[in-house]
Image 1: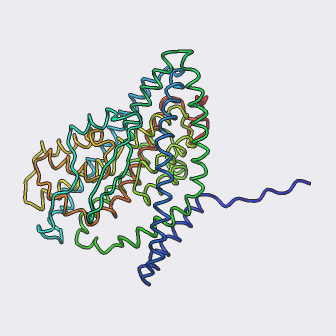
Image 2: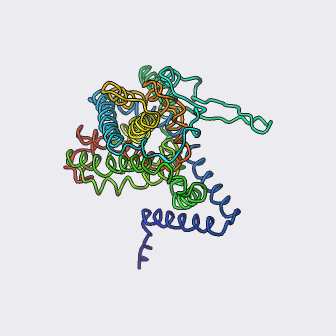
Length: 430
């Protein structure tokens, strides 16, 4: 007689338990001062994020090359790309308008509990020239090295530019397709490599509950909520804006396209919550691509749209946050803004995210906005104290948007898998 299948504990519940455990452990460390436990949470969380980031370059490269090969069989490949970019811009515009509205209504710069002495220029800034630097690959793998001096010791760290990897992969994939039979062996090897990296990704995703517990616990230990009191109005404006985009705008767009918002968020939750605790769209990228495919989006299109979105689709970091922050700085320093200035804020939010692609942190996007408006860059220093707390919410909204756009575009193009998210049955194209 066949043995009854052992029931599996739902993965979503595993993640929720991980979040609850992380909160409990974090508050335990803050209450008891157990340094060892706090360091253990920090180390475990960082190792989990490192595992995800280690998979990003090879996974993005092989997936993009494979998607170029697969997209040649789709009649509407060019329309898919155009629709994707259009939706990126449209949702960014909606988000920045919400940010401007909240900045004008709540006036966070007039209710700040900080003094001008806390203002200082950030160490990194954004400029429009960064667009060219971010697009043109510096080397084959888009790897950069930076050396920092601290306490007389030099430390060199390596990082990668996802946008440059995407550009290189598109060029190589297009060349492999163009040369015909001579490129078929390379494309077969790439397909095998992609399958291997996807298997590695599944193994890492299985560790998500543990990584979530560690990252949440570490966030509670390191940041707490004390710093929010001085900038409460500003933080409230940011999180209200994020909530409006995530819980009102996105569900409205899904419903308008015949999709079930509840099913979308249930499926996209692993990526959204990982973005919240890890504060990294790039580190979350493999999980985001995985959930987008489970939402019914063809793998060939998801492999192109999700990595592109991870570098340029930032409704939280590049739209709401710089809009509210710019208005905060203007109000704090008594600089009047006019209608043209608000238009510039919207322009930077829609276009500027590409100019800062490959650079880390919303501070870069904020300084780009401030410099474009002629506002003091020292104003960014006022907001750095609570940036990690805000960054959790910003990244969660970023990731949700990076899953939303490919789903909507696939739905409009008739590519969404049959009976997914309440959509009518279509012949799935993969």
